Length: 323
Ligand SMILES: [Zn+2]
Image (cartoon, rainbow, N blue to C red; front, side, top):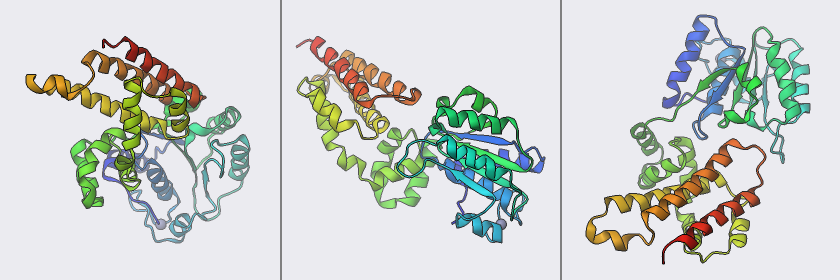
């Protein structure tokens, strides 16, 4: 099926549309923004706009032979490069094969398009090979790189692409859109949006996996850790293969909620509402933020070590807490 433009992608789409009108289409576009904004769909839409034979003001028609081939994933002039099944990285062989195909003339359309997604999963050799492609752009070829972690890409690769940042919609727009998609689950959208950094599609996916219902155990584990009753080795084993970014944003959300309760509570409720002091909550929040920063900037992380470091830093705070 031909994707469409989400409301929060309109600005990025208009920029692209203007480039088409002015015949200033970049050779390579780097689409960035947090995960769960539909960047990949936008990339496919942009590719369709080049391949379509009946495009009107850059908008693909969705009907012509070319659009049908693209929708069926069989367009000979379009290539999607993603990690192969069972692998987490894009290998150099995939980029080499891509280059060979690029040397052939296009079949159906006047243009050739390539999507590399997620573009932060190439290994070093693959980046070097891609860099050469970016340095020798071919006519009527559009390369679109998609990533929610642009800083993981070598700066040389980034600098040879035109960067297009997709921002998350404001909360009101996100909630309205989510309500139209999942009217029965409106109650959980707001909390989940804070975990997904405002990304509506990621929020929808969390609703579908019943994240909030399933996070009861995580909450128990977290509070056991904060009160010095958890075994860090056992905890780190049970967390290490899960989506750590999501887990840590959830921990941050709970910590922020405790802080908020502290600062908004009246004198009579303050002492009993939260078992931890504001200073302790701030210290925990710092530990969580440090881990989130590592998760979003480091490429070769050992999850077990990362979790053990985090738990030791929490335990350090726990023992310092006045009894
Ligand atoms: Zn078409």
